[in-house]
Image (cartoon, rainbow, N blue to C red; front, side, top):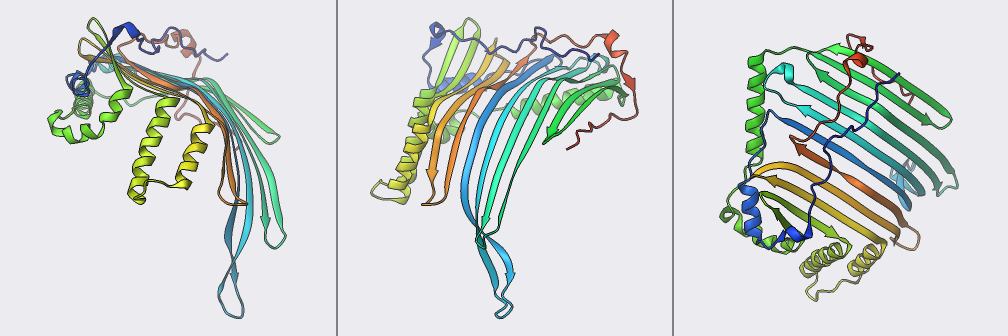
Amino acid sequence: ALVGCINDGADTDLPEVNEGDLIEVSLEETYELLQTMEMPEITGNIVAELKGSIKGVFEALLTESYFDGFDYKTDEPIYRSMDIYRKVDVDAEVDALLNVVLGETFNEFALYALLNKLEVKVSNTYTVDYDNGDTDNGTDNIEISASNTFVYMNKGLGYVQQNYTTKEGNKSVQYHSKEKVELDIISEEEYRKNIEEYKNQLEEGFKLPSFDEISEQMEAMEDLADFIKVYKDGNRYVIRYQLTKATLEQILEDVLAQFISLVDEEGENPTVNSFLNIITEAITDFEYDFRIEIVDKVLTSISMTFNAKVENFEYNIDDTNYIKIHGEIKDFGFVIRYNGKLSDFPKESDLETFELVDEISEPELGM
């Protein structure tokens, strides 16, 4: 039996916000809050989750030219045209979790990356009409699914459990394995050195210049301040950058207005304005939510969620060629939490059933 891989209580919830905790701060004050933020203790743990789903249909008819040899009399290259119709249906869902424990010693180090669920279905239908009357068409269907699949590294051993199913056309393949390998053991001195280097790189990566040093850039970003909110509850802060359908339309209008003013002194461009209207009418739902949580001046979590829905987007390139899109992105995002609650690791009794091998097998998916 495969070892179960579920999120048993791992702390991967979005940092909560209460509108009653909303405070009025300037863009400079928000930046200073980030600038004074400290990194969490490097030898703690990290929990991260990625999840979401995407469904959509892309349809297009495009005319393209192709090289068809040389004229035997003039030796000039011959180019012909072809009409390519393509329709791609995509349906995908993912739920993955990562646990990392960076202990003081190598024996305390642990990594547990598990794929709770992966479902991908892609259908690709195409028709090619050549100008000489020839036609080529077909449909490719591919399905990939995975569950209860993980990598676990601890105390000098690496465990890999694989559970995949693939389907291409009428051919279906299943792959299951439970294997372990011996990892390269490093000395405690080398481990501590690696941890220290990682800590320095992390601190350097999060080091921000002073507000005065980037004042010009911040002035250019002043409009973004309307979409940034700061919540305070005691010694806990949440910085939130949120976009909705209404704010997205506002941003698109501002960006296109600046673009048009650069290329057209009269400030009007019917083609661009028409394209903007098509986009805003097709996007029926949109929400982007990015959060940074700080407690006692220490970074505790980073998260993002994204939802969007596009209905009946159609852009006619000319009288013949067109592009159509219909799709939805639902609850797609991630959470990274520092020193949060870990999920339950595999039990020792289950890991004893894994086969010791020299090298982890690659899945034979038949694709």
